[in-house]
Image 1 (cartoon, helix red, strand yellow):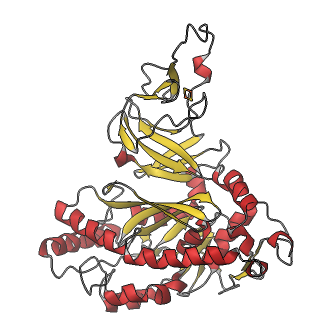
Image 2 (cartoon, helix red, strand yellow; image 1 turned 90 degrees about the vertical axis):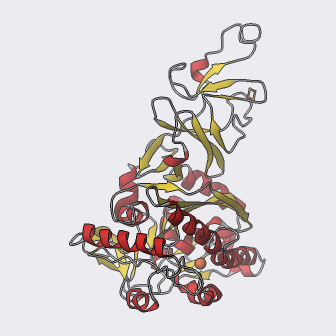
Image 3 (tube, rainbow, N blue to C red; image 1 turned 120 degrees about the vertical axis):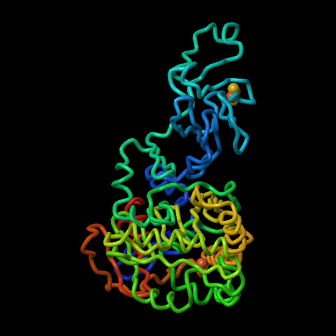
Length: 449
Ligand code: FES
Ligand SMILES: [Fe+2]
């Protein structure tokens, strides 16, 4: 096979349900992904609770680049490329803080985020030797920090895109919005109201970013094998021996009626089924903690009341194309798989809680989140092992000639009545979500047979 392409001349073959190993290891394909995918799609950069006050900033990433997320005195949020226009030095080297000016540590150009001093936040403000060196002829207005082309705050989450021609964020999400809402809305069913618990957890893994992303584009298939030990250990938020979502009984009953859902034209997927009237959310039990138990009983009751008779969704994991995955319930978290190289991914994980939840609830969830996911959590460590070995194995001289099988449940997806861009599979296991992800990937990469 030339260049790892398959029989029909493409890397992704949706008719056969196969994907070439080449796309996980090839340097040229990786460079092309940065141009064709990460420079064109909407990317999650953070949460507005990370910049509550004017002048607050934190560093985030978009694709392989560092960006500054900051709030100006008019309370507007800006996302700026963290590179000096003079010779490229990072103008900000702190993870977070508060400032009205970013001064480049190389030759001292300074960029203000205070719209009162400059025309536009991020504009070049101070230039050492402006008179002696530049004879006052440098047009500062042309040399400000680079802004993202598009930015949108959705229920507290900040999203950005480099492409002026990108569709609106709402079009980009399509029906996936309902599933993101299950993550971002309060546990009592009211809109929004989340905040980031602590900072971001960041770590690097020697794997291709797509293995991680497709895992959340509903790989329910791996859980019974990969996470068996974690399931046996009973890592639920309620403590030792407790389930993640409600009792074993309620959980089993639900698990087999939901189905799986994907958006082939958009590339998103989620492990939960189509919207239903009165879709249920499963709350865990807290036998050892009466205050926390009472809180969750209370929010559960309010949620049932508030959403009664409304078309809503059962919360379930998902992936917003290309690289933002989420767990909407327990744990409640978002993660971005930043591409660093074909075999290098930097994971950034955010944990969310209701802003108004009592301290005891936030603290219990903090402990649960730490033992469940993140680089030291039991479940995420299981996953990372798989992605790292799969990436390494994709590189082998002989192995590389043989594509992967993505054919489970091929041909069984059906349209969904109340979500025009979605297809659903009424089964607990299928690879339709991964096919939607790689189909969209192939379209953006112009991977034509
Ligand atoms: S690189 Fe920033 S001032 Fe020279
Ligand atoms: Fe997993």
